[in-house]
Amino acid sequence: MNFVIPGRENLELRLREEADANVFFSLIDKNRTYLRQWLPWVDATKTVGDTLKYIQSCISNFEKQESVDFGIWYDNQWVGSIGFHYWDKINRKDTIGYWLAEDFQGKGIVTDSVKALIKYGFEKMNLNRIEILCAVENTKSVAIPERLGFTNEGVCRQNEWLYDHFIDAVAYSILVSEWERNK
Ligand SMILES: CC(C)(COP(=O)(O)OP(=O)(O)OC[C@H]1O[C@@H](n2cnc3c(N)ncnc32)[C@H](O)[C@@H]1OP(=O)(O)O)[C@@H](O)C(=O)NCCC(=O)NCCS
Image 1 (cartoon, rainbow, N blue to C red):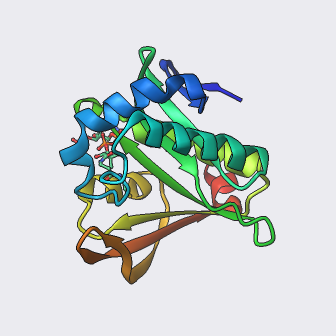
Image 2: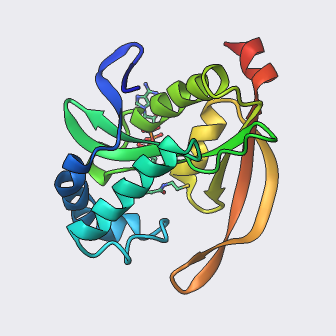
C-alpha cells in the first residue's frame, strides 16, 4: 500500500505504523504554532501517547475501510500527513485532508501527493467524487485544489470550530468523469 509518487523518487506516501509515533509527535510538537493556525486537533495532541492513539485509530479505520491515512515522507523523513477521512461508500465519495511541516512548504510536496491520492481514490477505492474543504483565508491550502483543476462549489459557512471561533470553508470537488477526461 505504500507508494512512491511518480516522477518524484524521494516522495513517498506510507501507511501509519505504531513505530512512527515518536517522529510523528516530534514533528507536530516542533510545528505547533504554525499548524494550530488552521488545524483544530493540535492542542489536544500533548504527548506521544496521544499520537500513538491517533495512529492506532488510523490503522483500525483503514482495516474497517472507513478512512485511508498516510504519512508523507520526503528524502526518507516524515514531513506531513494526507488522507481520505470520510469514506462514504454508498455515495462513492471521500474528502482529502493534508498538512505539511513548515520547512517543507513551497516544493509541491502536497500538490503531488494529492494528485497521487486522487488517482488512488478513483482507481482503487472506486470513488465518484473527491472533496477538499479549505478555510477561506488559508490561501496556501486553497491553491492546491485550484492548481489541480477542482471545481469551487462555494462557501460552507461556519464549517469548523477552530479553538475559539468558527471558520468558513471553501468546498472543492473533482468527479471521476472530469479526472478521466483530463488525465
Ligand atoms: C496547506 C499546505 C499543505 C500548503 O503547503 P505548500 O507547500 O504551499 O503546498 P505544496 O506542497 O503543494 O507546494 C506548493 C508550492 O510549491 C511550489 N512548487 C514547487 N514545485 C512544485 C511542483 N512540482 N508542483 C506544484 N507546486 C510546486 C508552488 O509554486 C507553491 O509555492 P508558492 O506557495 O510559493 O506558490 C501547508 O501550508 C500546511 O500544511 N499548512 C498548515 C496546515 C493546513 O493549513 N492544512 C490544510 C488544511 S485544509
